[in-house]
Amino acid sequence: MAIKGVVFDFDGVIVDTPKIYFQTMGNFLERHGLKLSREGLSRLISFSFKQEFEFLKEKYGLGIDFEEFKKETLLESRKMMEKDLSLTSGAKELLLGLSKNGFGVGLASNNNRSVVEWAINRLGVKKYFDSVVCVDSVEKPKPAPDIYLKNAELLSLSPSECAGIEDSVVGCQAVKNAGFYCIGLQNGFTDSKLLCADFLVESLSELSAEKVKPLGSGGK
Image (cartoon, rainbow, N blue to C red; front, side):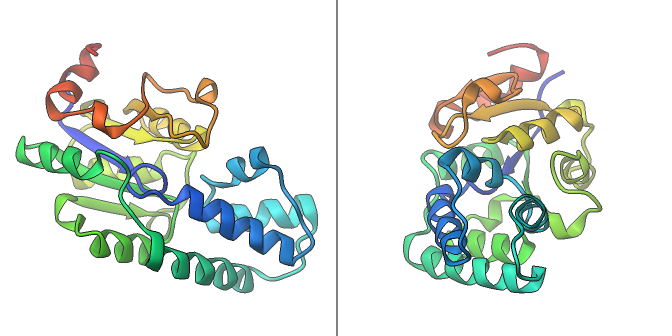
C-alpha cells in the first residue's frame, strides 16, 4: 500500500534541538550534583518530561518536585532556542514537497505542545502540518503508539498508509507499535544499530514525496 501520510517527530527530526538538550540537561544535572554520560543523556532525549523526571528521581534520587524540574529545564532550553533554534537539514524542503504532492503531514512529539507550537511558528513551518499531537494530548507517551495513532486519525488515514520519521529508539518503537512504516534518521545522537526502523537515512535531504510514496509496499 502506498504511503499517503508522513508524521514527523519534533526534537532532532524537524528541529535541531538535541545539541541544546544535551547542554541544558547536562547543566541541570550538574547543578543538582548528578553527572550522566553521553549515552545516559541520549537515553533521556526521547523521554517526555514526566518520564525524564521519574527516571532521574528513581535512579539517582533527584531531590526536587516535578513542577520545579519542568520549569528549570524548560526555561534554560527556551533561552537557548531563542538564540540557536534551527530546522534540520532538508526539513523545510521535504515538508513543502509532501504538502504540494497531497500527502497528509503530521507531527508527533513527546515534548509539550506549548514548546512545539512556539517552535514551528517561530520557524515558519506550522502551515505545513495537518495534525500536531504532543504528549499532553494523549494518555501514554512514546513508546506507546498513542501519539502516532492520534495523528493517523486526524489525517483520516489508516496506520498502514502512514510513515513515521524518528531519530530515537523510543520513537521508532512508537512508530512500529502504531503499525506505521518507520523511517529512522541517523543524526549522530542515537546508535543507529538500535533503531528498529524499516529504512534508514542520514538526512531528510535524502527523502522526497516521490521516494516516500512507494515505501509502504516495500520500495526504497
